Image 1: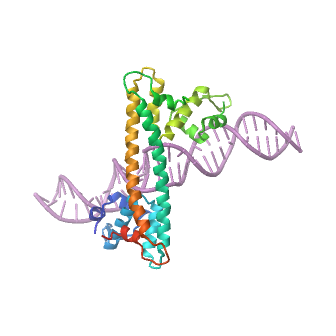
Image 2: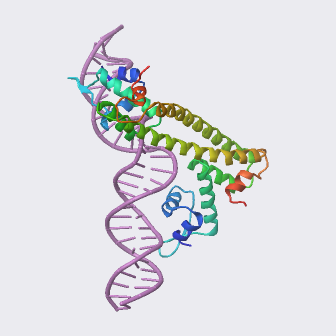
Image 3: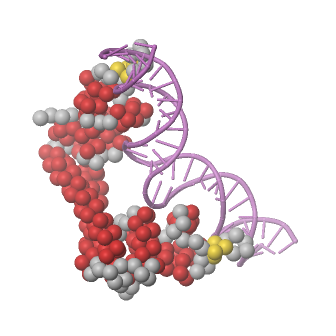
Length: 129
Length: 129
DNA sequence: CTTGCGCTTCCAGTGACTGGAAGCCTTATA
DNA sequence: TATAAGGCTTCCAGTCACTGGAAGCGCAAG
């Protein structure tokens, strides 16, 4: 199977699939014409990667998860640990964004947003106490 | 004033200040020995940048905001527009993270996390229906 | 035989820094 | 006065996960 069809079936751009090969996440065979020749198992892996990435796992985490997926002697605790750590990172990020959002929202509401130059958003950024 | 003191007073790493000069956000003078010579107005600008970045504004937005700050004929509506757009982007990001968080949290709770290999997290990533 | 698409590789750019090397400048101490 | 420590300089490379684009080969249709 050529990369175009794999891209469609896995939902990943061909560019991304080539990149994943480059960094060793998939190892498709090669046809005699030099084209990548993907097996069903490659599509399966790529879909796995797509879903993991969609959950925000880093490429490094994806590598780990893929390794665990293929390791029949894994312990589910290992998988859970990776996921929990990622969950905590997501929570941190959400908290940070919410804090930004709150401040920014206050400033936006305080700004009348008309043709006059005075603006509480700029005053705040300028360090008004 | 040398970069070290400016770093302390603005709260930005010296590396970042040099970078901001490189991309034209600040233009400190130079002493005869080649050292950057910052004025109070430079510190003020850098602190402004620090606060804007802390609210998640992109460097490009920061450039715009600084421009508006220094433009006495600005209209507060311009500032508000930039801030509102950023606020919307933050909301999008929060929504996306929350959605990830929800899925991931369910999976983490469903995984017993012991020494056995079967794991709903991996099953989900593998595309179990 | 040409057109056009799909595939290949390779290089560069993204955003916003950050780390590190090599070397000059200044100040304090022996 | 020599030297050592620390601050400053520039420049290059790396981060993360792609993405865009150029140049060129392979292949099927008209």
